[in-house]
Structures are given as structure tokens and as C-alpha cells.
Length: 352
Image 1 (cartoon, rainbow, N blue to C red):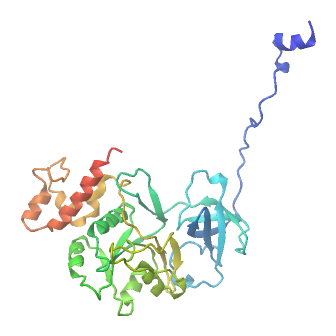
Image 2 (image 1 turned 45 degrees about the vertical axis):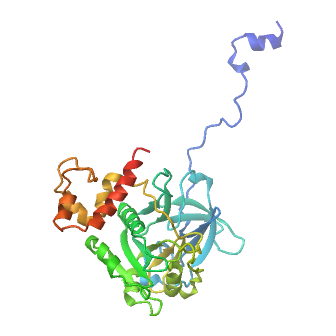
Image 3 (image 1 turned 60 degrees about the vertical axis):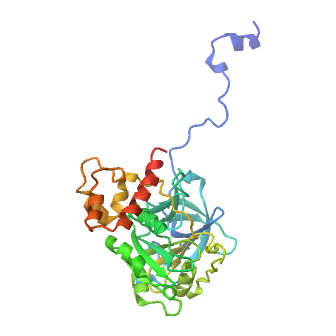
């Protein structure tokens, strides 16, 4: 028997073929990022992340401390996601750790190797039938819903949806009504007073009130609203060197032109941060559990405790306490109708 025949006919373990390539067990050792630089993601553009590195270690977290309000010593570092992050998302507001070239010099590129645990995540979907969540901002503690009182007219349903998203994310809402020189804010404010939502009002023909700065100071605030409501104008007033593009409202469609194309996180000169987001025309709530929606309407939630067990608070419920409260004048029927529109929309896609 030849040696070649013996190789394939005899049970000889030494004659088996070599293992395939790339089958070596991975090492259990993992990189140590103890010396990594801490930063905050301030914007994202086509797979590149601009991160802010503070001058002193430990000051990168956007706490809004007034003592760190200045930009002295802070630098912007361009970075990309490291492959080790896998599917871990990186969004504006994230506190991250960087390795590589963190000098911030032109042409330099660092790597994001870790994303710290988020305190809050503000999310939305494109619409109620969209199963894909779109995280907007991490670690915010206030959602500023910017709404024009005229040109374009206010959209209460969009305001309601933003409120639901804010409560779901455990972020405090603030209603900012602009262009009060064109229309009175009282009618809109009356709708949301039962919820206890804080509000500020601005005018084109007056200086920005001190109340606006007080509400934003020492906070991480996200500005949301549809195009043309004055978000970029507000940002430029608060931060004169921000140079955010502004646009006009179309006389034909009554809608504004998108001037902000991505979320940008900016440091306020008096302490705190604001995040200017692109104008939105829808705010889907597919990510919100429909059974939790009632919690976003404090006035309705209190009355709902009087409902019989198993009540869904829909229009078809024969003994819903919300209807009784409306009949007795204890609840604004517009608020109940607004809540039920949201509930109907969410129930339609609850099983998706």
C-alpha cells in the first residue's frame, strides 16, 4: 500500500487536514481604554461625528454648569465609530470615549470606542405605522416645543404628540410660542394650562425675555418644531455666533423651508446647552406603549382613576369617566378629543 493510499484509508488523526483559515479562537483580552478622552457628540454628518472635548478632564458632560459656560480651551474633534461598537448607535448628546488623534487639528480623525450609559433618550418615528425608532438626542432633560402663533399657524396635534414623546422619555416639556406680535397666545395657552406645562412667549418686535434664558439655563434642551416657526432665529438670538440659517414661510403652502439639516448641540453663553433639530412635519409615536399615553395628560389621568376596571377610554366605552367629566364641565372636551385621536392612532398599529 502506497503512502498516498494509506493517508486516506487508515484512521490516522495526524493525517487529517489543517483547520480552515480564521478559525483560531479569539483572545479573551479586550482593549483597555483607561486613557481614552471623554467627549460629547455635538453633531453628526455622513458617518462622521463632531465631538466636543473640554479643557479639563471630567467637564465634558453637558451639565450646563455656569462655571464651565465658556469655550476657553475646549476643542472640536472629528471622529468615526470604531468597529468594536457593533450596532451600538451614536447620537447627538452622547457622552463618548475617544482614542487616536484627539488633537482636533485639520485632517485628524479619532475613533469612538465607548458610549456611556444614557440618562434619557428622546425618540420618534416617521409616522405611527413606522416600526423603526429614530433616536433624536441623548441625555436631554428638557424638550422645547417651538410653535408659531401665526405664519404658519399652530398645530395642536403636533404639540400633543411632542408632549407624549417627552413624557415617555422622562424629559420635561417647555412650550415656546413665537411671533406673539402676529397673534395672541392666550387661546393656545388655555388648552395646555390643565397639564401644568411651562411656557414662554416671544415676539419679533421685542428683545428676548429673561424668562426664556431662565428656563434654558443649566439645562440640556432640545428644540423641536415644524419648519418656519422660528427655531433657528431663536438659536441665533441666544447664541449670536451660531449663524444658523433661517428661512421664510411659503405663501402657497403655508409651510416653512427646511433650514437645519441635522441636529446640532450648542453651548449657551449663560450656561446650559441647546440642541437645534431639523424641522419636522410628523412626530410618530409607534415606539410609545399606547397604555401609557394617558400618563402624558395629567388632567385626564386623574379623572381616569374613576373609570371601571378595563376601561380603554375610547369613544366606544359606555361608562368612561372622561365623558362624565366633560359633561360636568370638569374637563376640556378638546383635550379629551386630542387624547383620543392619539389613542385611536396608536391602537390601530399596536400589534405591528
